[in-house]
Length: 520
Image (cartoon, rainbow, N blue to C red; front, top):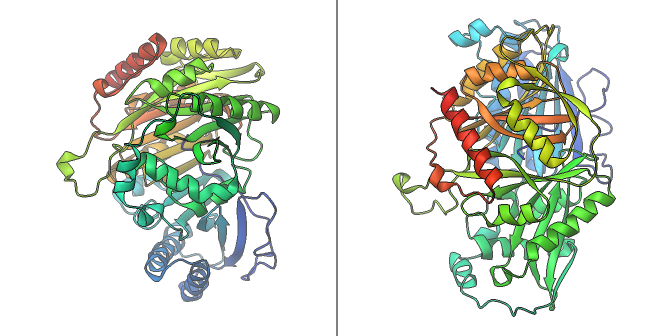
């Protein structure tokens, strides 16, 4: 799943402008290291000093001059806009600027406790605090957090330099590998924990199997894989032949250390060994690993260009919980291909495998989805008390809510995650939806916490904006999650989507009908 942004608040330090004396302190298995923190008054005369610090730190972490200049540009604009629109030029309030290394990325974070956003002025274009916050041209990912009474936070994330296996290999190696003879039917295959020394072998395997087309970009970069493996956010197994050659890989990815559910992903199987049940063997291995570590369930994305990966998951006890239409760009290289020849975006099925029991809990769901969600929970075997809400339900949330916005550039997706409802939640949501649409983001998702009262009401109101059912994931993060989806002028054909079960076909039909209904 394209998870909601990981929001880790560093320890408060003395509120004076300085470099943290704990900078660079690394905790084993941590995915995040704070390099520096500045607390500074919002006066433009300090801007050059801020830029110097951030630029020097970016350069020290290997980021080139061009990328550093782009980070500087957005940093300057954010700083100026906070001063002008958030503080109304009140220089007595401070801004916290933190620099992190998160996995294999460089993160600039700005936190302020400025004025609430004036949505009327935002609509008129007079409040420009968002103008570059969500610009995907400056960074690999941008996260925006509305923290209620705690203010606002913006993260600009730039992947650190890494070796791209696609620069080392020629596409002919992919094409020739697909022509190799299949392995003998009795070939020896061993499934074991992934040997971290084989990371470079893994990226070569990804390229030989998929060329330019593997969906998750980081799987082409050894350094990015290593950063995830050395954290508590990813664990992997490998499939090895009799010569100890890596011929398969599967990982479990967690939204945070200690999460109750994990995402099964980064699956790769050498074409020579297809038909040898490598994927089911790896999935069984990782399921046993998850169970022994207290993980209650595993979810995963299955492609829909063919039904086989869905079928394999179903045979291992999975259930379809939804489909995301047009989730990823067409899986061919876009090199030397015209705009008109680009294939349609591809859809995915979301599969959930229960491993351990889940405690009964209340969930608040939109009346429009009662039947399908109750059916999904019954198939999974998790008990829930369903409380129905609709657009006419009482909504008494007061104060400011918490809302996060994230952009995933490689898939051209935007994700709006609501952690807490407030009296202005719908206004905030509408604004961010409009901004994402104007930036021509193809697919926009809303993640809603089903265990929170008001989710059924909010979901019903989002349907009026054109959102429709996506999927559910039990116990994701601190709540069961309902994901709704919105397509921004994306062409979808049901003929492109293959299912592997009668229920999957029914669920897909339900989603496509819901899409049609909300856009009628």
